[in-house]
Image 1 (tube, rainbow, N blue to C red):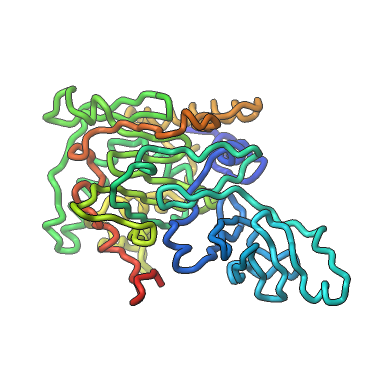
Image 2 (image 1 turned 30 degrees about the horizontal axis):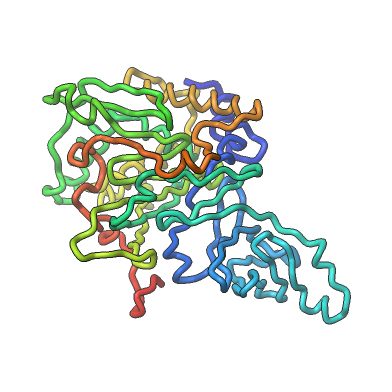
Length: 408
């Protein structure tokens, strides 16, 4: 268990907090590129800051304070122009650096003071169909080119949800292998029986051994299941917690993004081989909303979301622990060694930042950031992925399209 002070230290993400300062050293996904194809602005909340992501009329991305400096209108309603975003309320215009470049009525009276107006602004880049933001100190590091983000000739799909809990409990789950046996096995079968979907049941898996190793990009999680030998991929190779908060399997990246102390955005990024004579543009990437179930109004589980897919099961449990669960009351066992290891690593990296050093996975040399390879177990061994099931989530939880093929 942790002390209350340590629990606060590792969960609070505000600027100036220990973990908040660490997390600001990283790039996070804040949008899917197809979202800006349907509309060129998007309200974004990340690390406690409320921002507007926009694409100007030249197609350039900007990320600035969500509220106009004049009367605090939300710039998500703004009008993109060649050189910036115009507030719909009184016409003030801001460029991608957050500078006010026009004040129409003030200029008519010859009393402009636009040179004194500055909104906060942050670095933003697109990679692999996702749009990433960096809120930390300058100079900004490079956007990490993880292998799946830069893989060519693949079909991509992207899901998103916001879960009403702190980022730490979503991240610690990555290093909890034994929960797969119970939450995604025994409980999944129970939920399937409750909804009459008996074909959703799966054979129970049983863990014999688990192991964790700190490696170049984070922590590798490994498991040995009943009936397997130590030559099995999921024991020899395993899969990743990419520091600070991303899960990597053979065909997916799952990004846990702190919204504030009480909410976590989760991005589900999957790649699959293209079919013969097939291609995919950025605009064609399927998008979906992943359910994040809570108890129904009668205080009972919503089994219709819990009887098959693993991610809604995870999300329901994250929320069930409370907004920020009280780690002073937890009782850790042998299955929690990965979580303890992660907390030690997190504390170490906090100390690096406090000493003025770059933490783990901050990249500044382009020659070392061409393609960051993250080996994992084979696709047939990954227990909780969507292997061989392209569009499984995007079809079940899809966002519909209008007749022009654009998302609404």
